[in-house]
Image 1 (tube, helix red, strand yellow):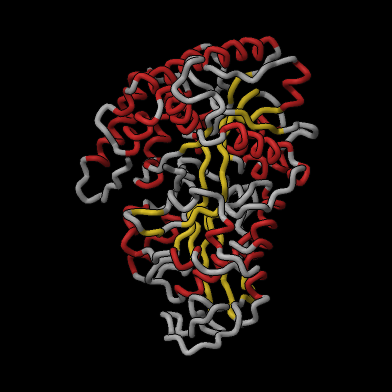
Image 2 (cartoon, rainbow, N blue to C red; image 1 turned 90 degrees about the vertical axis):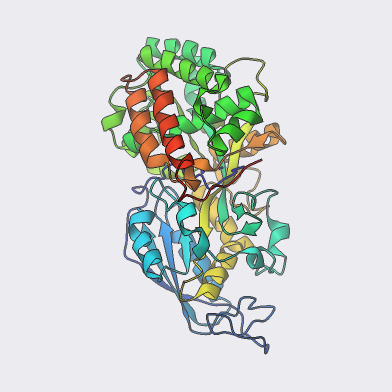
Length: 469
């Protein structure tokens, strides 16, 4: 997805809305356990108890708006069916959306937002604009799951950090996203190619790709900032924490850091050598990804771990999709090559002005059950923040197995960032990156364009800033 970040980032990564299609909102029967205490009613009007920790009112309705991208939205519908087993007769209306900001900003302004939102995608709502309208979620992770265990004890370490702002847990990122440079292990094995560890090695691989009539990279217009995410991760590995902090804190000339410039120059050399498939700025991003996963026109593709599920119907048989760490600039980088960008993604929020705040929290609680989390990992081939839901064989997925390998080798050298999502920069950055990847701008112009976007936010007194240390 930080996305740190580990972050809300997800999205400086766009998830593809075409992967599952858009259907009509679904209505499903939900539930919690019957309330049996005399605790005061919550906003939803129910009584709290150990089995109904938020006081969901019996037969109430929960409205959920879910980003319909690479992960689809029916995993929330599945969680609703899990919740239904608790027999409170609560119903949920799970509605897909591909442009969260356009869909929900009017509702936030009017004071009638949904009860649960997956604020994801390239067009997510900037958290800084709705921060005061978010319910705190510490009670969710401190409650017991449906299996009777405290939810906080079932989660991977550090996954709540991205959504904790000024000491308050306001966003819960559901998917454990691994960012990597993805490739076909079978294609590499057949050609005797080695995955590059530095940008210089990537250039050399590009020369070999040309001999086979292939490109090193492909890209699509809506996902041009996937290469920004790759560049940032590479620069953090090369230059260390000071690179991440400069970007996170919107420092003047942060994009001019030597490590970042080293990455940009390495990428520019590859662009100028014609190793990016031409036309990406005019190509729909899933079509570009299919050029990689189905046509094998390109060797490498930077993405989050949603990529396998997103392209599952457009991947060549026997492709053996596998992830590798991001390249560094030199072989003596500040962080080892095995260091990686990983974070909890798919940022879920419960609007405090929703009609059924307790119901929104209860549906989120259902998503954190072992049954719902295992279903997500199996059907989306990506783990959630809930531990122990992926078997050693990765449900038969080489991509999922490689994620476990990457995390194991990275150890404590895992990082992420949050500034892109937090301040809603992705849309402006897409323009700059499409131009650069098309070979129509220099490193200096790329740097200047990104710095202008950053400075605009930094100098806007109406935007609440988050200091990262």
